[in-house]
Image 1 (cartoon, helix red, strand yellow):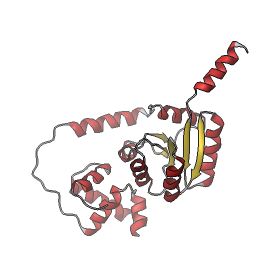
Image 2 (cartoon, one colour; image 1 turned 30 degrees about the horizontal axis):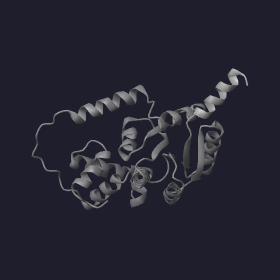
Image 3 (cartoon, one colour; image 1 turned 90 degrees about the horizontal axis):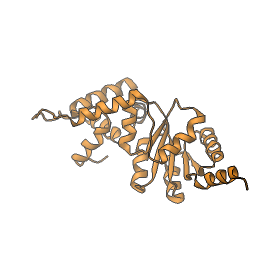
Image 4 (cartoon, helix red, strand yellow; image 1 turned 180 degrees about the horizontal axis):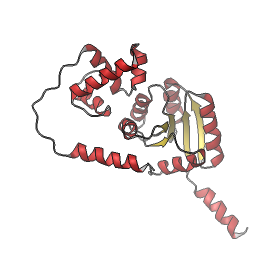
Length: 229
């Protein structure tokens, strides 16, 4: 065997392999991703699933190293929390997210190990997943700067205040419960059968009353008061 062949064989043996479960409610998306990842040689696609029940049951049964979750899956943030509660070592990677500070923080608060932005090229997908699997996460310069700014703001000394959060209306409390499990404004509007503009108004008012700046803090507020989700 030639030296180059021995090196190639050694590289194949040394290549990291992840058992991946692909989750998307769009069939051709999950099947296409399965084909791409399966051809790479570095990933073992254990299965493909769609809704929350399938995702949870197949994760429990197949025990993948990683769940690749479509950001468009309904109640996706809540699913991430359920998966993390089920297996703390499970790495959940969300794909096709809008790469903004708010979006990244929302998924990070839920417990994802990393994300693939909606702007990522198919040719870069395997490398990005491999990097996340080894503890690396590329992100845009604007997101990195925004995250640093958020962290600096959160750890800065805050002036003492005796202000008590204003009482929430029954509708606002309902909105807060839905925010705490990760629902988006569109999902809340659909769940409550109200307009999107009305939903945004309720969300804005509720966050202002709770004295919080981002949606991910709502779950912490709920837990601190032992309110049921």
